[in-house]
Image 1: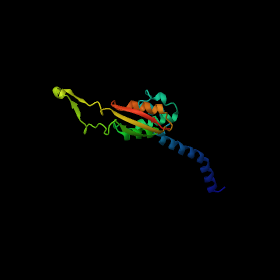
Image 2: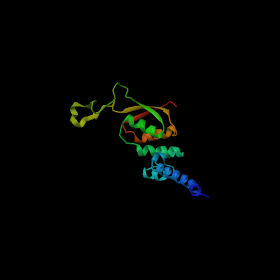
Image 3: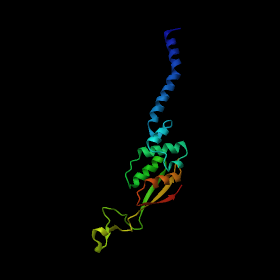
Image 4: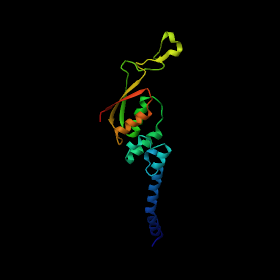
Amino acid sequence: MSIKARLGKILQAFAAEMTELESKIIQIINERVPGLSNELLPEWERDLGLPDECSELATTQSERVAAVHAKYYGKYDGQSKEFYEQYAADLGATVTIEDYTGSTNVFRVDISRVDRHPTQGIDGARLRSKGSIFKWIVNVYNTGEVSIDYLICRFDQMKPAHTQVIWNDLT
């Protein structure tokens, strides 16, 4: 038997192990990303404060992975429609959000005014009741792998106190 043939047999003996090693390396790389993790999912959940009151609604493995991914990558920018639309997308859902105030303008701190009774001076200042509460109509087109109840729970958990969310399920 030639040297090439012997070397070929030796390499062939190691080929299966090298293939297994390569797949394990790829799996380890994926485990460090919250949205791709399966074996380390409990550790990611613990680090991110999950499970919480909404987590009982995430029952499948893919729902739990999506919740970890959304919480890890979520940048809590406050009241931003774009943030909530992206957060829903991170969970696998497709939503759009529309402002609704019952008037033509949304209440804006830098534009709208504060009412004040003239006799009460600065201490009598209060926000106008009309327009001071944000109302969002959330149109849900696709929930992906998460339930609508889970999506509602997450939005209610994170939304500012002065925001009322009206759900329009179009699925």
